[in-house]
Image (cartoon, rainbow, N blue to C red):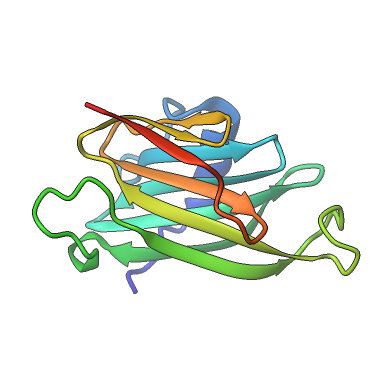
Length: 151
């Protein structure tokens, strides 16, 4: 696994609060962001040949639930496939305890290769795909409805 950018969590919070055009470190390019009802979010970056992402939960501020990275060269791409799943599923302890009586819930983040995808819809929200990659996040066991509009 590649080394994570030292300001990854902080930069992710800036993207959540101000969008993909927010000022960011020159060596950390924001690729995609998904926010679900102001409650959970995920941000995807490119950094020195790697994809790095952070998953957040909101209580009184955005707090990181976890972060990870994968080398772009290690992604299972074959030619110009339109979609590639890279899954990051984890049980996390909720600080807000809204999601289950025990305060535990399953949080999923999925990264998709989005070349040739003009628009990615996840449930009722649109996920930006300006650089050919997208991240989506959700709670629970069921994958939300996904639809794509081809470029």
